Length: 366
Image (cartoon, rainbow, N blue to C red):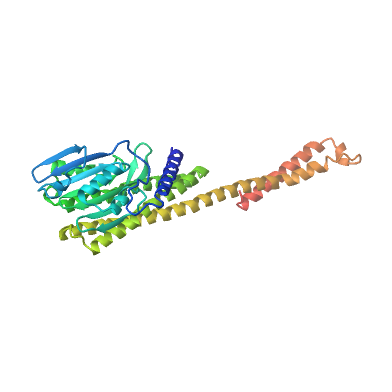
């Protein structure tokens, strides 16, 4: 299953490289989808809420989105599917989002970053989650746009980590209903960051199982698993490091759409990012030690096999000498005429083999 997943990822990367090649020579701001198409049709979901009401409805078109920024409600527009560039462009045109930002939104290879504009704040990042069908971590490109009274999230597919946030809004739990859109922006970011811990727990459990297997029964399949885990941790690290830089830049240059009291929550997110990076680094060190342990275990096992074979060869050297000596077929060999020659020679050979075994045991070679 993991080999099939690796092949699928390689195919997806090849598809992305092909798409990037189509952008060559195009002017800046050209909206071309870069990445793998994960859903058949793009979807729009709008959540409008306030202290006393909640409303969730699908949208068929991005018309009249501007009215959401001036309403008394807080609004969350979730866009699923980035391959529909016409839809993304229509949303950008309705809300006056710069074409360069739209270009980054549909580019699933975009590095995480934060940009503050006069009318909105943009954050690009990666969402990590465990794919139930394959029981392994996956990364998805996500973009968050904060406007007055409106937050827009752009996702590659429907599977996301935002359901707890939806449930809190639906049930009126916590502070979401009474806060402005910047708190919703923080809640979505916090949900993404916190889910890295869930993914790392899965990776950590796999590493613990791998540790026991390497100690008990080292084999070549474990070596492949170690390399796969190292690749996944490297992908997580590449997603987290620039996100940490983006959050730190946001804390330094506080956007005007984020209130001072919510900056404290962003600092908490920044602390979580540091913890994630430390966890990833510790797991990478553990995998490095597992790799060394695996190679050492295989080497020790080989040494034990060679030791047994060497002892067996050493025991048979004198026995082979005796057998070869009396197999020379010379006519005048007095022992050949002995009545008890054969049992005596066999007894001597047995004593020699037993004596060598006792000697090897005293030397602790066996």
